[in-house]
Image 1: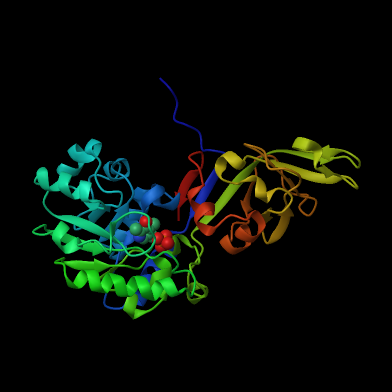
Image 2: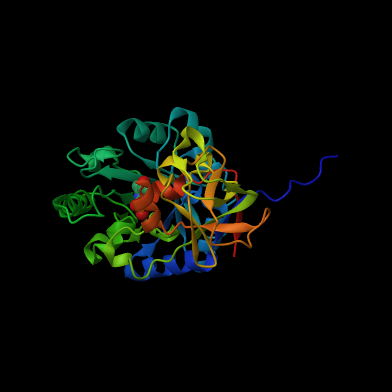
Length: 349
Ligand SMILES: *Cc1c(COP(=O)(O)O)cnc(C)c1O
């Protein structure tokens, strides 16, 4: 008989109250529109099932994933919740899609034909109004293409909502025009940043992802959006790096004097990428413990000279304020969240 797995030497403390608070703010900002949640990429790295259950409890009803594998991992859904699959239906997906627990977002004439022929029923449809990614081209006769279909949510996706860009208003106009000729229960355009653009972008349903998880999509969200993800790592060894010695791969750090160092169980395979080398920090009770040398695959060296009391087995916080971490690493808030790997224990508080 195998024993239960020991707690991992790295974990994400996830603040459930901050997640719910972020959703309530986005819901509020969405005005009369319902506010859904994008939970693709395993809930942006936090864990899609936990995120869905917590947001459903807060009042969220509409969830979005990218693929049918992501959708199947969430079945059965909480009562009263709807799930849409943004990447539509390939031939390989039809068995899962026809089981009816989630709706495909149909993106192409081929997907529409496939769904019609199978007698698929209620679906969502994506119109591409300028991002040139997924969706029916807005200049196509979208009404004719979808004639007679039961469309639940008709949607489009903004390319530049995080900036003040001319394309925002153009996409809004194009979407309004296309939607006027079509029949759908509900319209949806805005992601997190789109919600901040104001009422004209909200339509019937908004689809935030990033801001739910603590990412700051635009300055308007800066004051209110709360940090949700707090990585923590355990000290595996404490050592003195002697004056003149180097530390880590490629010997990029040389100790000018004796340095007290802790070796943490965290590395680039956990999404703490090499850009944090010599720039990132751990935190212990408000004291900054700077990263020394290169980030390794599974290990990180930090300077603990300021904390003589820290010993092997202790835990430290990683400074993961997304604005700071983004400036240090060159990664976007999206990358900082979705890159968090499978080796963390995920502990909701
Ligand atoms: C990912 C995604 C969202 C959420 O976007 P955020 O920028 O994370 O708020 C909304 N709609 C679609 C179609 C998406 O792919």
